[in-house]
Amino acid sequence: MSASLLTSRALIRLSPLDESEDVAAFLQGLVTNDVKGPLPCYAALLSAQGKHMFDFLVWGDGADLLLDCEAAHADELVKRLSMYRLRRRIAIARDEALGVHWSLVPHGSALPDPRLAALGHRWLGAPQGESADSTWTAHRLSLGVPEGRAELGDILWLETNAVELNGVSFTKGCYVGQENTARMNWRQKVNRRLVVVPLAASDEARRLTAYPELGLAIDHLRVESLDPASLPEWQRAGVLPAEN
Image 1 (cartoon, rainbow, N blue to C red):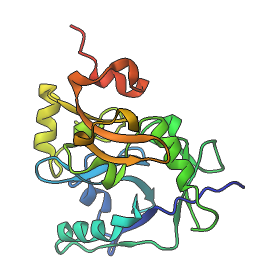
Image 2 (cartoon, rainbow, N blue to C red):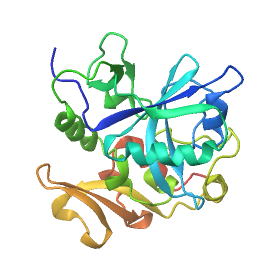
Image 3 (spheres, rainbow, N blue to C red):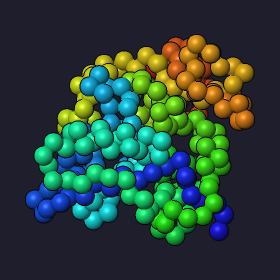
Image 4 (cartoon, helix red, strand yellow):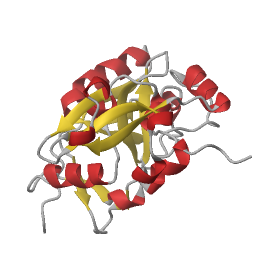
């Protein structure tokens, strides 16, 4: 089999320590998406102001939940979630026995990426095999999909294209940063967007990060400066004026 392991990803397991605990209910009050609905789903933990802190995919495993997150920031995410846990009997720790795998084509029990079907398929398994990180990054950016701390920064969640990438629920109820996020959606006031652009056309003042080897950059630009024709189809609807 070709390389599939995403070594840049880690898994955090949330487990109830007694039968009275509900891990999904705990996470439901913290993150942007509905973790009581179909899984995996894409979600984020925001600041109180509605700005991105951590983004991840949420997987179910019986009574447990698994967060497919950036390995570089996994320990920080564990610490943050533990702060919200207070005295609840829930274990929150990295699961080193599992890894995240990716394939562009269907594979066994793999599931489509909940953000965008064209991103391919993911599954959880033993952390073995060759790394697919460079192939994954190139494919993801070719579709215009940013992820992670370096690419999303600390900008407002809706400016990361969270609606278009199925990363937010407006019906699930309260979560950290929900008030500002819901207000922006209700007012349709998403003034800036993250976009993947050719590095040669990138505005250094608005650039979050760059990939010289791919000739690409991630810029945070005002919506009125964007040419919809240059955007991927999935993103275009979010920046076009709504029809009356």
